[in-house]
Structures are given as structure tokens and as C-alpha cells.
Length: 383
Image (tube, rainbow, N blue to C red; front, top):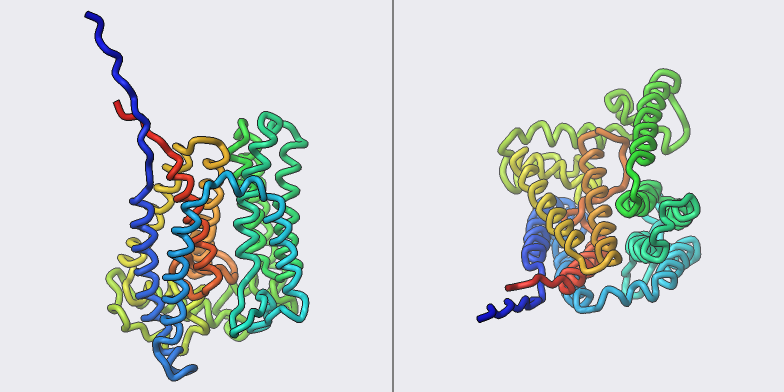
């Protein structure tokens, strides 16, 4: 008798591990935000839970948005990729109109009714991920040509230039440009040209910084002063080195195990706006090196799950969407850690899931929803 062929049944998949990591990071971030911002909230608003309450509302709402986005077929984004991209460009242009809002010398927000505001540059990150992923799928084998490469870099350049010119946010512009560069690297069949470019940029950057430190001592340029402060923070205390040094003091005083949750002294008005991009310094002080290792492990687990989804996505578009989101989160985490530890000049890069900000958490959860939506299309064969 002939043996019956075993039937292979394709079963649908959903990445619950990624969902669990997202929820845990969100809860951990809220705890650390409250610990970090309670003093400044009490001083400024007579309410130690001011920042925590607002962030909690945004986080809960964002989780609902993430669930909704995860139910959308991600192929729909490709249909409207150009419209999403140019809509993001128009929103950034509105920053320079009377609708724009300025805070602490930076004009990067759009004012909304009800004393709400948002950063259109966050939308641009998602728009670039969608458009470049879609264009790489359309180009196909032509990506191996100069025309294909230049087309992708052109989109990245337009987006980065828009962020830099309209919102005057150089750090976000760098992230926006790096996203298509990484997507191009992943989709391109050859690795050697990219390695040459990376080596050239690293060597040029090191030589440039060395030359700058020996030839330029003072400057009226804001961004150049940040570089000079990074090179010599102790002697630039009055022009930007104060925040850097206090952050390093917080990191050093925490030791391996930290002073304990809520016991930071640097958050008591010493580090300005500590709940934003410098929140990691307080985490280091309160939870020590051990706490930072836990955070890095969680981000590593998050990146691993997104990478798993990218590798098993049913098509190239879904894979590139996941890689784009993974790139955004990875670059932002690396840059934030580098700034806090003074490994690079100070920028306004926040730490995902931890830093205070309604716009950032909303669009971060939208990205997570897109990745979860890709995971729902994965099917594994069961014998």
C-alpha cells in the first residue's frame, strides 16, 4: 500500500513575544519617568505626577493605536507611500508658519487646539521607512545600478533636508537619512562599496575632530560649540558643558547597583529637563550599571524579535518595513547612549519608551503596530 502524503497546513502567526517586550518596556519607562520627573513636576506645576500622568495617557492611547495599526494589511501603506511622504513634508513646512511652536529656542512643533502639539519630524521617520521600502521593491534588480542607488539616496536626502531646514533638527535629520542608507545596504547585493564608504567616513570624522580640537578654541556657532564642549566639557562648563558633566557625575555615582529607585540627587534641578534626552543618566544613578544592562537587554530582545519578523516576512516589502523600524530604534538608542556618556556631541535625541514626549511614543507605537501587522502575515508550515 502506498503511504499517504503528509499534508502541510500553514498556520497563522502573531509575535506575542514582541508584544510582551513592548508592554514591559512601556511600563518600565513609565516607572523611571515618574522617578526622574517627580521633583521637577512638583517645582514647576505643584504636582509630582504631572509628567507621569500625561505620559501614561499618551502611552495607553498609543497602545490602542498600535493594536489598530497591527490589524491593517501593511500592503496598503505601499499604495499611499508617496502621499504619506509628501504629506509629512508639508506638515514640517507648517512649523515655519504661525502654527509653529517654539520651546527653549527650538521651533520644531505644530500647535494644536487644547494646548496640544506634535513634532512632524516623527511622521517623517515613518514616511521615509514606507516610501523607501516601497521604492526598493519597485526598483528590484535595478538597485544594482547607479540610478537605483541615487534614487533611494535622493528620497533620503530630501527628507533629511526637510527636517534640517523646516524644523532645524540636525540629529533627527541624521536619523532620517540613515534609515534609507541601511535599507539600501540590506537590499543591495554587494557589500564592498558600503564598507569602503563607512571606513572613509570614520577616518574622516576622527581626523576632523582631531584637527578641530587643536585649531579651534572658541566659536560663536551653536553647533560648533557643542562639538568643542564634547571635546573638552570641563573647560566649557559655561557654554554647554554643565549638563554633560552633571550627567557623567550621575552615572559615576550610581556604581554597579545604583543608589536605589527614587534616590537620585542629580534629578533635583541639577540636570536641566532631565526627563527628556538625559533620562538615562538618572537611570544609571538610581539603578546603576545593572539597570542599564537590563535596559540594553530589553532593547536587544526587541531588536531580535523585529529581526526575526523581517527574516520571516512573506515578501520583501514587509521585510524592509521591519528593517526600517529596527534601524530607527537601534540608531536612536545608540545615539542617546553615546550622548549621555559623552561619546558624541550633545543632541536632542530621546531614549525610546523612556523619555518624556507624547508625539514620540505615539509614532513609536505606530511603528510597532506596523511590525506586528507584518508578523500576522507570517505563516509556518505544520506537518
